[in-house]
Image 1 (tube, rainbow, N blue to C red):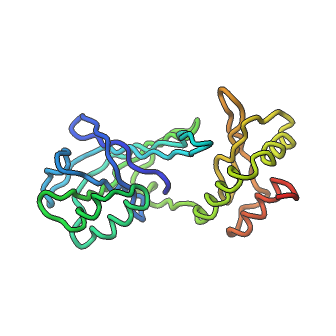
Image 2: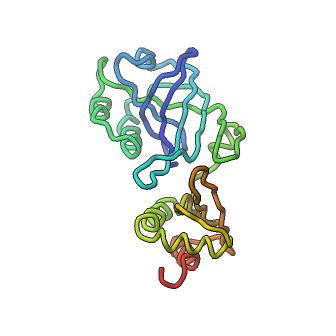
Image 3: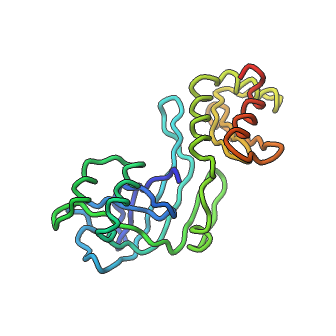
Length: 225
């Protein structure tokens, strides 16, 4: 998952937060002294709502891709699992406080895991709700890392080719074209000024691996790419 926690709501009050997600997609929160969760005893949990936001940086500007609002139960990560949790958080949110969290101590930052009850998702023009079973039973796209690398390369070096490809497919001008999403089922392009549109371009068949995904993208971009 490429989203990261931005806010946590506790007892009706929202606070900015930092963290990541574990391998199952559960939020991990880095909680520093003075923050409300820090006072929670290790053996207790509390109901919280966590916002996880995903963004896409285009031309140095961050744009929202989607938002997950998760309600569940926050509990301090057990000492034996703290190092693994810190590594997961560092992948999304590097912070020197993670070293102190691993060292432990009553005044050290803490790491908390949120057991998910349900999830509200907002992505583009789609929204809905998932229960914990449906959410936790869904994995990330298996080619996520490869897809993100290809996406970054196209946006850095081949945007003119992308623009021409989209205009040829749609028959309409596609100014400010950026590759927005890339996965085994297709590509999404963000194009236009003012109120850009998202244009979904499905592959003829799902990519079976990163090489297939690379070939599908190359076919979209044309022979020079």
